[in-house]
Image (cartoon, rainbow, N blue to C red):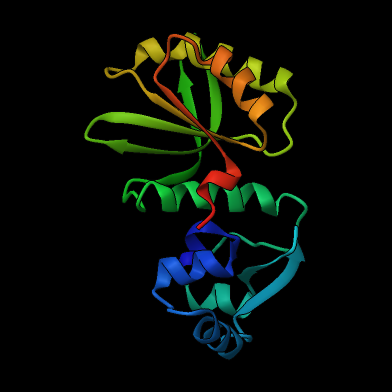
Length: 181
């Protein structure tokens, strides 16, 4: 079910989300699920996703396959874990405010009524991040509560650039290595 919800997961994420214990036990469990789970190597780690049989078993409509964007998902999942698995977490959320614009955030969750918008900057060009924040600034006044922006990026340099983009807004910007479990 974790793979249905989060699409791509590495072994340590699967261990945390499913209480698989140590590495040897996790490997044993994953091997026993080989009919339902495929894997590939990316950035020195094994990434898992559902096979056709696995999708059928858990009624998952979203087809995943080996992808160069898997690290984007892994970074997002690290934040999901760091945020203690919010029950309201949704991936790839379209936010539309008539007359003001629309944007797709990488994920979103709420605490009470306060929205948290998640943005993952794995290989994104800063120009695109600038456009996103321009759009967010146009639409956030339509929300009854000011959102919190949670960013995950790859370097201290990019974190500093994102801090400037988020000036005046409630935000937290993490470097992916800070979230590794």
